[in-house]
Length: 249
Image (cartoon, rainbow, N blue to C red; front, side, top):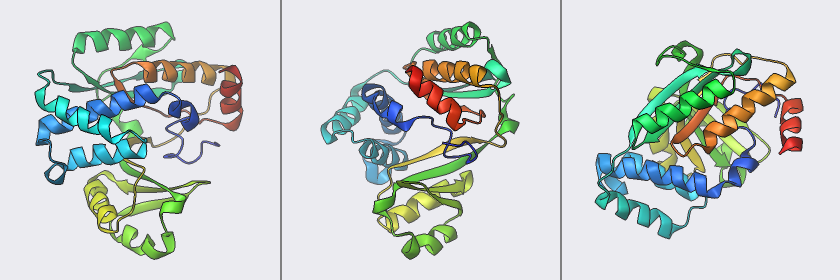
């Protein structure tokens, strides 16, 4: 991927992420747990849970796993806290981590250690807000949508950008239109593979290949951390860097 599309380059190497099924399911289970504790176990009356279930289905999470996660959340006394970390990695690349954890001290210690070992620095919360904008990103398999039929409806619901990739349709909205677009997708019976508020960099930064690889290795480490839900950065990921990463995997 070339890196000039801001919302389609945040998640590098989808195929590599798909191979980490257990980690993906673990993150979805945490999101379901938080949603149930916030709004109850009925998805009809709990928009956050409904969204988490839809995303779980988009990742082919078995129905039994989803139901077990909901049932366990009702009985589980543990609660997860949402924490955000911001810092700079190799090459001065901005990194934002969104975490769900039941142990703040463990998470803070692990994140600080990962930053320092790779030559990065952990910053203060809010220090990188100006570098990212939060947008609603909806990913739909291309064969699940007839764009000609629904494009005007999506624009009316707040679509700022609609991009067709090789196998997906990606719809971007302003953060405040996320709920409106989600309801519109449900009304139009569009099967959404994934819907989430993502942090999109205002500008992408280019660095040399070796430093970019080092940065992406750090991103991989963060994504392997069980407490980290999402990792965002402003690196321009070039085809050359992706090829080098894949050859070394």
